Image (cartoon, rainbow, N blue to C red; front, side, top):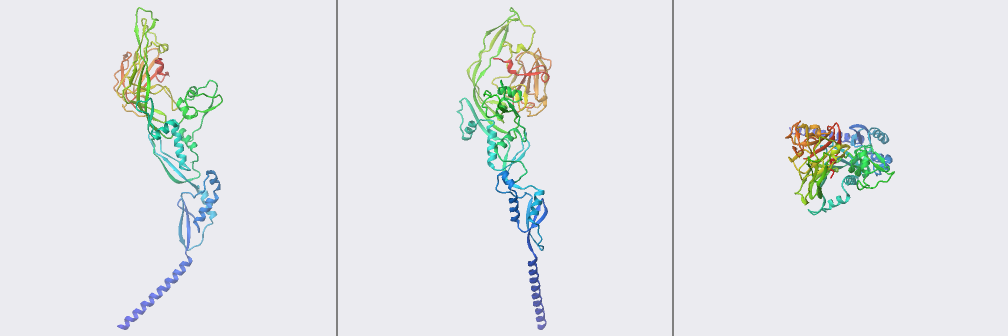
Length: 504
């Protein structure tokens, strides 16, 4: 039994020794054949193998002198989809570095180090991305964008916290920000992508729209900023934004100079709140007294009107230079001088209407809203379209709207939501509204009102009749009245500036 155990032990020892010898020889053979290589992948596909990864990167960097010069950068990098993976193989066969480089160049673009800027989606804009070489390009471009809408002095005062005293005449800016979220991250950017190398170029495209085409105009004798703006469907503020070298609409123009008449189409939304304290003249009303003992053409001002004067403190929001339609009074106006309505005595009345009556200081047109009020948007071009009326705000949600003069109600539109939104087509964009025919082909329109309209089509109304209540229906961004005037039915005739009804 003991002999048998010794034999088994001896056999096991010999087997272990033989196995060790075989494994050692196998490893020696393997170590002689296995080679460290790098497989090169592009878009997930193998395009070859190389011995030296750093040599490939150096070759790419060396070959792209033109890109370095074009973008003024020190290094050029492989495409983002290029992967160089370490591998061990029994073969020593590799590809020529030049061949690998040529394949990469043929299939994909090389990259440079820069930054990707992402702008979030909003109600008015889709989200988008763009690329810059360095962060200062974005910072300077955003500042230039902001300074298109406010002065540098006002911007700096906001940054350092300088504000007016609560009762000082003037404007205080608050809560400046971009509505969009703007994020920036490092990235290797394809050299064939659009890469902004200067803040000036980026600022222009953010202001006028990507891929905009600039339109210019050569100043001629007799031109003014107002006339050039009107002829090219701009309001004067839009002109001044496009031509920052002019400080106001009254700036002098030089014959032969060229000005930019491109309509701004901002890619960003710069928002800020305004607190404004100002002295405001209050127009007096024109009252008519009839004296039937006088001839029809008799007219005499028997009590001259006196404009009132008050200090108003208002708050409103502005986005890209455009004031929101809704305005709020921070407190009751401080009356400095009471207005005195003008009384005109006229002869016996005759049924004659015409445009000339509108411009007569004794015509008796009354203001359509309650006090206090403020004009938030004038009769002017706005974003390339004519704003065919006055936007009036400040008297508040549900405040009364009055017929501006005697007439017949010819249109009543209800059924729109009392809270509309910009772009709504309800009521043709005017929401709940009323149209009055004043005779002589003269019509007034009262838009964006609440749905509870107290007049009906065919009803005769007198000057001062309540025809509705201020709301926010249709294509609207806040509580206000759109007050329109036209010769001919609105939309079929000629719109006129309602201010012409009040020549005081």
